[in-house]
Length: 73
Image (cartoon, rainbow, N blue to C red; front, side):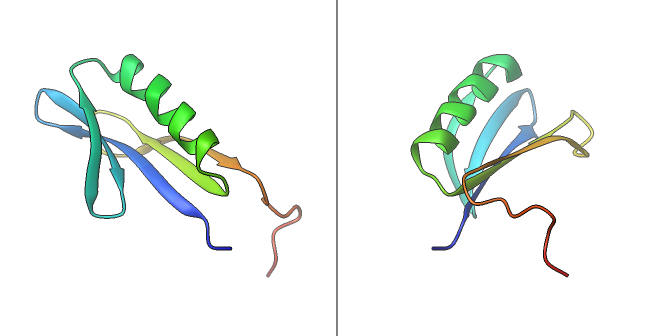
């Protein structure tokens, strides 16, 4: 089963949760959106949540289910 990737990214004065190219949620406060994003990723396993900072750089990453360790390759 393929893993779904969710991303929390800045969007002007708001924050958006993306699944691929689609915006699935948005919020004024990053903390509130991260809470929603973590629950969404948990509910749709296997998934990955990538959280970006205000500059667009990756700040944190979480994988839910089926994260092989050590990684292949």
